[in-house]
Image (cartoon, rainbow, N blue to C red; front, side):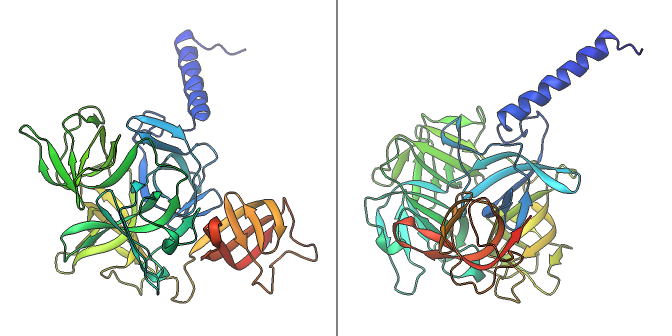
Length: 413
């Protein structure tokens, strides 16, 4: 019979308790994955579910619960949905990537001050001093999905919305705007409004501490700075909360969180998705979601594609101490080039079935009525509890918002 000495036994118990606490809480705040240790990071758009798929890459999410920070410093359980922007931490676990923390990261939550639909698509809305662009072309990145409203033209001034999207640089106006990946109409005005963006025109001293986010001035004299006491700087990505909408273009912030990146750690590669701006082919740099990316020596996937102004990409690399993402690999998305990239993908068990034109997998409403072939499904019709993999594109359908119109469906064991 072997003997375990007391110090060793104590260490084993502590490790077991830590493991149980991590599993029960489903991760924790970003920066640790709930384990106390730094994790690799990815920031991008939810483009599907199997576990959770972010910009085409799948992350196992069975050991983590998505969270949303709807008030400064207060995270609550939330449900990840197609088109949402997420900050995710992960680690390599065998042959797959294991998510350790998922935070849903809305670009802006508030009340519409302007709506400008376009007959051909690609209209705009404005709220919280931010100009938001609808994207109707898969070549430019994830097409804008809608929830609770039949597209941008059905919105009106005064409606409360939650917008997810990626920052894109407007050279003519020298400011960031938002390219929407998801717009959800809310049933009521939220108690706390929110806006995320890149800090500019910072005034950190004097009687009035202020900075700009797009076309919004943020007064943060009385705001709680997160992480605790974190000083602000120009170029940092921040999330801002306030109890009231802006007045005369000024938002009185109650909280400001600086989004942190793991810098100078080669063992913790990061991934960042977004639309290329301010491309400099001489210095081999560009702006991606407010981050400067150095692509010197980067491998391009597929190898016949190149980075271009306005292209939607995912960059992989390591953040330097200067905050620059030094890319080792760049994935260039272009769904119409040979069909190698998918717009949206959903894998899982059918949890509600009405007809081929209306069934649900996880949170996604699907219409497969346009398919003439259901791969590997045999002679049995689709029904609740069958496991399927669906690829498709977003199509608006009344107050449901967008549904996934299937271009391919296969049954799985």
